[in-house]
Image 1 (cartoon, rainbow, N blue to C red):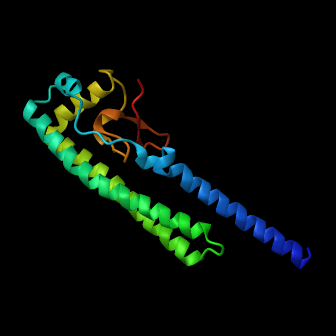
Image 2 (cartoon, rainbow, N blue to C red):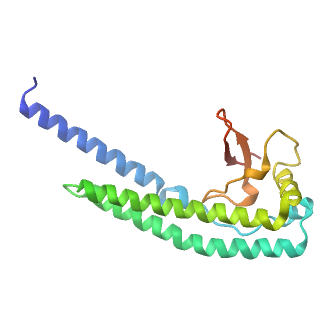
Image 3 (cartoon, one colour):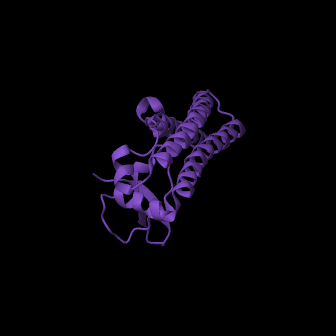
Length: 184
Protein backbone atom coordinates (compact mmCIF):
# COMPACT_ATOMS: atom_id res chain seq x y z
CA UNK A 1 0.00 0.00 0.00
CA UNK A 2 1.35 3.48 -0.88
CA UNK A 3 2.33 5.86 1.87
CA UNK A 4 -0.40 8.24 3.12
CA UNK A 5 1.51 11.25 1.80
CA UNK A 6 1.57 9.70 -1.69
CA UNK A 7 -2.18 9.09 -1.54
CA UNK A 8 -2.80 12.66 -0.37
CA UNK A 9 -0.59 14.10 -3.14
CA UNK A 10 -2.33 11.96 -5.75
CA UNK A 11 -5.74 13.01 -4.45
CA UNK A 12 -4.79 16.69 -4.63
CA UNK A 13 -3.46 16.27 -8.18
CA UNK A 14 -6.63 14.48 -9.30
CA UNK A 15 -8.82 17.19 -7.74
CA UNK A 16 -6.77 19.95 -9.41
CA UNK A 17 -6.98 18.21 -12.78
CA UNK A 18 -10.76 17.82 -12.42
CA UNK A 19 -11.19 21.49 -11.52
CA UNK A 20 -9.01 22.63 -14.42
CA UNK A 21 -10.96 20.42 -16.81
CA UNK A 22 -14.31 21.69 -15.55
CA UNK A 23 -13.15 25.31 -15.77
CA UNK A 24 -11.80 24.70 -19.27
CA UNK A 25 -15.08 23.20 -20.46
CA UNK A 26 -17.01 26.05 -18.88
CA UNK A 27 -14.72 28.58 -20.55
CA UNK A 28 -15.08 26.89 -23.94
CA UNK A 29 -18.87 27.11 -23.70
CA UNK A 30 -18.91 30.72 -22.61
CA UNK A 31 -20.26 33.36 -25.01
CA UNK A 32 -16.94 35.19 -24.95
CA UNK A 33 -15.26 32.07 -26.37
CA UNK A 34 -17.92 31.63 -29.03
CA UNK A 35 -19.78 28.92 -27.12
CA UNK A 36 -23.34 27.71 -27.48
CA UNK A 37 -25.24 30.86 -26.72
CA UNK A 38 -22.90 33.22 -28.58
CA UNK A 39 -24.67 32.74 -31.92
CA UNK A 40 -26.69 35.70 -33.11
CA UNK A 41 -30.45 35.27 -33.16
CA UNK A 42 -32.28 35.94 -36.40
CA UNK A 43 -35.99 36.27 -37.04
CA UNK A 44 -38.18 34.46 -39.50
CA UNK A 45 -37.55 32.51 -42.67
CA UNK A 46 -35.35 34.21 -45.28
CA UNK A 47 -37.65 35.96 -47.76
CA UNK A 48 -36.24 34.26 -50.86
CA UNK A 49 -36.59 30.81 -49.29
CA UNK A 50 -40.16 31.54 -48.15
CA UNK A 51 -41.04 32.76 -51.64
CA UNK A 52 -39.61 29.63 -53.32
CA UNK A 53 -41.43 27.44 -50.78
CA UNK A 54 -44.72 29.15 -51.64
CA UNK A 55 -45.37 30.60 -48.18
CA UNK A 56 -47.96 33.40 -48.43
CA UNK A 57 -46.99 36.86 -47.18
CA UNK A 58 -49.48 36.70 -44.29
CA UNK A 59 -47.89 33.49 -43.00
CA UNK A 60 -44.41 34.94 -43.44
CA UNK A 61 -45.46 37.87 -41.24
CA UNK A 62 -46.88 35.49 -38.63
CA UNK A 63 -43.62 33.49 -38.67
CA UNK A 64 -41.73 36.73 -38.14
CA UNK A 65 -43.99 37.62 -35.21
CA UNK A 66 -43.64 34.17 -33.63
CA UNK A 67 -39.88 34.19 -34.10
CA UNK A 68 -39.46 37.68 -32.70
CA UNK A 69 -41.53 36.78 -29.65
CA UNK A 70 -39.57 33.56 -29.03
CA UNK A 71 -36.25 35.35 -29.55
CA UNK A 72 -37.12 37.99 -26.96
CA UNK A 73 -37.72 35.20 -24.47
CA UNK A 74 -34.51 33.53 -25.66
CA UNK A 75 -32.46 36.58 -24.67
CA UNK A 76 -33.70 36.24 -21.08
CA UNK A 77 -33.07 32.49 -21.09
CA UNK A 78 -29.53 32.95 -22.41
CA UNK A 79 -28.80 35.48 -19.68
CA UNK A 80 -29.99 32.97 -17.07
CA UNK A 81 -27.74 30.35 -18.60
CA UNK A 82 -24.72 32.71 -18.59
CA UNK A 83 -25.42 33.66 -14.97
CA UNK A 84 -25.65 29.98 -13.99
CA UNK A 85 -22.37 29.30 -15.82
CA UNK A 86 -20.63 32.18 -14.07
CA UNK A 87 -21.89 30.99 -10.69
CA UNK A 88 -20.56 27.50 -11.43
CA UNK A 89 -17.22 28.96 -12.50
CA UNK A 90 -16.98 30.87 -9.23
CA UNK A 91 -17.78 27.75 -7.22
CA UNK A 92 -15.18 25.70 -9.07
CA UNK A 93 -12.52 28.37 -8.63
CA UNK A 94 -12.90 28.49 -4.86
CA UNK A 95 -10.07 27.05 -2.77
CA UNK A 96 -12.31 24.32 -1.39
CA UNK A 97 -15.30 23.77 -3.68
CA UNK A 98 -18.48 22.68 -1.93
CA UNK A 99 -19.55 19.52 -3.75
CA UNK A 100 -23.24 19.94 -2.95
CA UNK A 101 -23.22 23.55 -4.13
CA UNK A 102 -21.37 22.63 -7.34
CA UNK A 103 -23.80 19.81 -8.11
CA UNK A 104 -26.79 22.05 -7.37
CA UNK A 105 -25.37 24.69 -9.70
CA UNK A 106 -24.92 22.08 -12.42
CA UNK A 107 -28.63 21.28 -12.01
CA UNK A 108 -29.42 24.99 -12.39
CA UNK A 109 -27.34 25.12 -15.57
CA UNK A 110 -29.12 22.04 -16.88
CA UNK A 111 -32.49 23.66 -16.23
CA UNK A 112 -31.36 26.80 -18.06
CA UNK A 113 -30.15 24.76 -21.04
CA UNK A 114 -33.42 22.83 -21.11
CA UNK A 115 -35.41 26.07 -21.10
CA UNK A 116 -33.43 27.28 -24.12
CA UNK A 117 -34.06 24.04 -26.00
CA UNK A 118 -37.77 24.15 -25.15
CA UNK A 119 -37.96 27.70 -26.49
CA UNK A 120 -36.45 26.63 -29.81
CA UNK A 121 -38.56 23.48 -30.17
CA UNK A 122 -41.75 25.33 -29.25
CA UNK A 123 -40.98 27.91 -31.94
CA UNK A 124 -40.40 25.20 -34.53
CA UNK A 125 -43.68 23.49 -33.58
CA UNK A 126 -45.62 26.78 -33.82
CA UNK A 127 -44.18 27.49 -37.26
CA UNK A 128 -44.86 23.94 -38.37
CA UNK A 129 -48.46 24.12 -37.14
CA UNK A 130 -48.93 27.49 -38.88
CA UNK A 131 -47.64 26.19 -42.21
CA UNK A 132 -49.32 22.80 -42.18
CA UNK A 133 -47.78 19.60 -43.58
CA UNK A 134 -47.57 20.62 -47.25
CA UNK A 135 -45.94 24.04 -46.77
CA UNK A 136 -43.68 22.67 -44.03
CA UNK A 137 -42.44 19.97 -46.40
CA UNK A 138 -41.99 22.57 -49.16
CA UNK A 139 -40.01 24.80 -46.81
CA UNK A 140 -37.79 21.91 -45.75
CA UNK A 141 -37.13 21.00 -49.41
CA UNK A 142 -36.10 24.59 -50.12
CA UNK A 143 -33.84 24.64 -47.11
CA UNK A 144 -32.10 21.56 -48.50
CA UNK A 145 -31.66 23.28 -51.83
CA UNK A 146 -34.63 21.55 -53.45
CA UNK A 147 -32.99 18.13 -53.17
CA UNK A 148 -35.24 15.13 -52.80
CA UNK A 149 -33.63 12.76 -50.30
CA UNK A 150 -34.60 10.13 -47.80
CA UNK A 151 -34.42 12.72 -45.03
CA UNK A 152 -37.62 13.27 -43.09
CA UNK A 153 -38.20 17.03 -42.86
CA UNK A 154 -41.26 16.97 -40.64
CA UNK A 155 -39.37 16.15 -37.45
CA UNK A 156 -36.96 19.08 -37.19
CA UNK A 157 -35.77 20.26 -33.81
CA UNK A 158 -34.31 23.73 -33.55
CA UNK A 159 -31.47 24.12 -31.14
CA UNK A 160 -30.56 27.32 -29.35
CA UNK A 161 -28.21 28.46 -32.11
CA UNK A 162 -30.35 27.59 -35.10
CA UNK A 163 -33.14 29.13 -37.05
CA UNK A 164 -35.57 27.35 -39.32
CA UNK A 165 -33.35 28.07 -42.34
CA UNK A 166 -30.24 26.49 -40.84
CA UNK A 167 -31.36 22.90 -40.35
CA UNK A 168 -31.55 19.66 -42.19
CA UNK A 169 -32.34 16.36 -40.58
CA UNK A 170 -30.50 13.09 -40.76
CA UNK A 171 -31.31 9.65 -39.51
CA UNK A 172 -28.89 8.13 -37.01
CA UNK A 173 -27.97 4.48 -36.85
CA UNK A 174 -30.48 3.95 -34.05
CA UNK A 175 -33.27 5.20 -36.31
CA UNK A 176 -33.89 8.34 -34.27
CA UNK A 177 -33.68 11.75 -35.83
CA UNK A 178 -31.28 14.52 -34.96
CA UNK A 179 -30.80 17.96 -36.42
CA UNK A 180 -27.60 19.07 -38.09
CA UNK A 181 -26.46 22.40 -39.51
CA UNK A 182 -27.30 22.89 -43.15
CA UNK A 183 -24.29 22.41 -45.38
CA UNK A 184 -23.68 24.97 -48.16
